Amino acid sequence: MLKNRIIPCLDVKNGRVVKGINFVDLQDAGDPVEQARIYSDGGADEICFLDITASNENRDTIYDVVEKTSKKCFVPLTVGGGVRSVEDINKLLNCGADKVSINTAAVQNPEVVVESSKKFGSQCIVVAIDAKKSDDKWEIFTHGGRNNTGIDTIDFAKKMEDSGAGELLVTSMDRDGTQVGYDIDLMSKISSKVNIPVIASGGVGNLDHLVDGIKLGNASAVLAASIFHYGKHSVKEAKEYLDSKGIPVRI
Amino acid sequence: MNVTIVDYNSGNISSVINSFKEVAKDKVNIEVTSDLNKIKFSDKVVLPGQGSFKSCVDALNNISGLVDTLNEFAINKKNPLLGICVGLQMFADVGYEETETKGLGWISGKVSKIDNQNGKYKLPHIGWNQINIIKDSKIYNDIQNNSHMYFVHSYEFIPKDKSVISATTDYSSKIACSVEKDNIFGTQFHPEKSDKTGLKIIDNFIKL
Image 1 (spheres, helix red, strand yellow):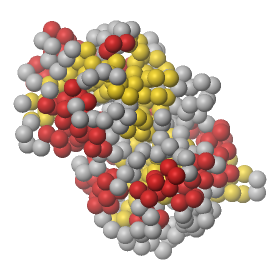
Image 2 (tube, rainbow over the protein chains, first blue to last red):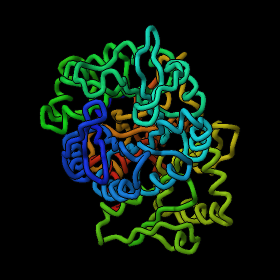
Image 3 (tube, rainbow over the protein chains, first blue to last red):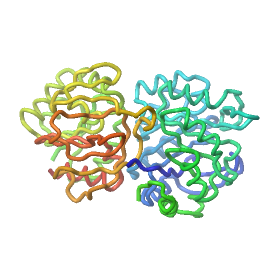
Image 4 (cartoon, chains in turn brown, green):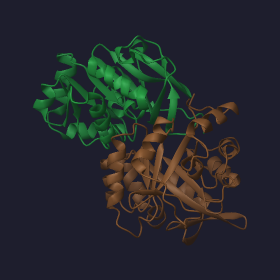
C-alpha cells in the first residue's frame, strides 16, 4: 500500500536554514546539509528546500547546498524558490535535486511547466501554488506571497496538471506561519479536482494538523517546517502519531 | 571492479551516481559514461532512465552503437546489468507512453499506463510503497519482505512470462516492481532514493 508522506521543509537563505512567520521575521535554524541528514535519518520521506529569497538575491548558494546534501541524503530531495527557466531546473537537477518546484514562473509562463515536464519528465516537476482566500474562492499569489494575480486557484491547479506537473504543492497564505492548521477546504477542493498528488502546506502547529491534512484534506503528502526544526516534534513522533490514527506511513 | 552507469541523456542521473559512489566508497570504481569501449569492458552496467519510455529509447538510439554494445554486454556475454525505473521498462518489447515505441526486447512484455480506476488512484504513483518479494533474488539479500521503496512512475512493465517478476507492489493492481532474468535485473522503484534499504540493494548488485 502506498504510504502518505511526511516532508520537512527547510527554508534556505544564503545557504542557511530560516523559517519566517508569514514570510518575514526570519530566524536562523542551522545548516541545511546537516538538517537534511538528520531528517532523513529520522525517517523523513522526502526533504524539501525552499530558497525563499532567491527571486531577489544571488542564487549560487543553493546549488552548493543541493550538491552537498544530495551526496549525504538518499531520500528524494525537492528544491524550489526562484526557479524561472528550464535552464534553472536543469542546473538544480544536475546538482542532485530529484524534483524542482516552480512557483512564480509557472504562473507567469506556464510554458516552463510544459517544456520542463517534457524534457525531464513529470516526475520531477512540482508546481508550488500559493493561495489566499478571497470571498468564496482562492486567488494565486506569486513572488513569495507578495503579488496577488487574481487567478482562481482551482482552475490554475487543473491547468498545471494538464501542463505536465507531476505534483502540486499547495500552500495556504492565510495559514502559513500561523500554526492553526492547513486550510482543509482548499486542500480537499484541489485534491478532488486533480488526479495528481497534492502536498498540503502552510499552517501546521501540531500533529493533529498533519492527520487532518491527510484525512480531511485528502493530501497525499504533508509538508511542515517549524514543528520539526525547532524540536517541537520529531519526524518519527509525527509518523507514530499518524500511524496511531490509522494513516498509512512508512515506519 | 568497474561498474558503469550509462550516461545517455536520459534525464537526471545524479542521484544514481551519488548513491553508487556512496556504496562503492573507494573499493569499486564507478564510471559514468556513454563511451562504448568502457561499457564493453565493465564488470557491471547500470541503465538508469527518467522521463518517458519514448524519450529514453530515443536517447539510447541517439548514441551510435550503444544498443548493440548493451546487447553484447547483457545478452551475448551475460554480464550483470541493472535497469532502474525506465531503465527497467526498456527491457520490454514495446512501450505505449506518448506513442508506441519499440524497446530493447530483452524480456518479453509491454509497458502500459497504470490503470487509475477512474481517478481512484492518483498518477504518477509517487512515494513509498512496500514490496512483496516473490522470488529469491540476489539483489534482495538481507532485504526484508515488505520493505518500503520509493516509486515515481505512471507506467508499468507487464512481462509475458510472470516468472521473471521478483517482487510486486500494490497500486491499483499488483505491479511488477522488480524483475530478474538470468544476469538481467531491474527495479521499477528507485533504490538510489530508498534510503538505507535502497543502498543495500545497490550494494547487493555491486557484490553479485
